[in-house]
Image (cartoon, rainbow, N blue to C red):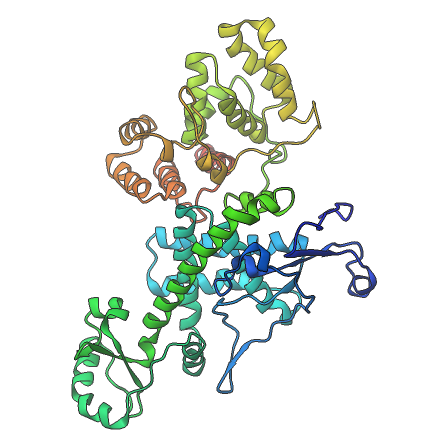
Length: 509
């Protein structure tokens, strides 16, 4: 974040920027702007009118772990957010780190990983992305990133549904890793008014509980096992799985089964919070923050989190004489479709030119070759003179040779999926924007077998578009892609590596 960026806060009762350098100098952050963000925006415990808002108090960025009955838990339940000091740059970086975790969980689930595999995956993702140089700040990073993403993902029904599902899954696996004492402390933090059954009541139903426990392969291991009695409709997951004893409308759940009750409550609280945050976003935040936080918030939901493909890999070039063959063997479906339409119609609308042009730049097509390539096609439709006047500038602009001379980056899968092509457009993601009939035809043309096509269509129906592309890649290349496809240029690079490796092996044979 540039230290020269100025932010006007006179109209923002919830935000304040501290430009003083007295504290920052000693902390090694001279000239770094500090954003003190009032997370009341995202807090489901505070519903107030604009007139009731008051300037936020300055507080330290320290949040102590919750304590219940002497047991310390570092797993927040995100019920209410304390005001925290947040560097403006950290506002976005923390959110991106958490987003890597949530998207990793989403990918694991869509690939059908087993519960024990998911537990290991979540643990690895958390350790890799949610660390902090200062151990005391790890919990703060956890809280800040959650509430920033709550603001990001409150804006549409689709975004809310995804965030609710992924955050609930993350909380589930983190909760399961806690000790029994910490789990009981979290039950208290969630204000679940369920008390352990008395010894007398336990003895009266002990035989029934033992029968259920044996049936689910978890026999009671000791006499002091604690059970809770809750209305059966509050644990539908356990009831559906026939894993609890029910009597007079109440389900008897063991301590290790509390996760079902806790997760339902967590999900319910977060769902209500997202709805409230959405109302605040629509009525107030989006307009108030249109010049500062709104662009960040709107961009985060489609953020690409992988490598930078603005420049091709070193020593990598694509020549015009090879481009047709390479398009057939190594272009992802979205780029292959655009390439074929360009060859067929000798024209693409602006969205298509941007998507394909930046991709070609990223795979190593030089500016002079790009101009020759596009001119050869467009001249057949609009003539060479019109191309030079109306289209050549845009190509040079994409290469950073015109206008602000920005080195534009090829579109990621997330950005392409979020596009909304209109009539006559050919850009976008085929897995999202094609009809099933057209997608089947396109996959068949690429050489994807019928069995895999059905798997791909299944992923598309569940909106796992990138996984559908990954399955296509694996089918065509006969190789696994464990990282998944997240960028068209990644698809191209991985394809070239596989094909070149095979060619080298064949030449040596």
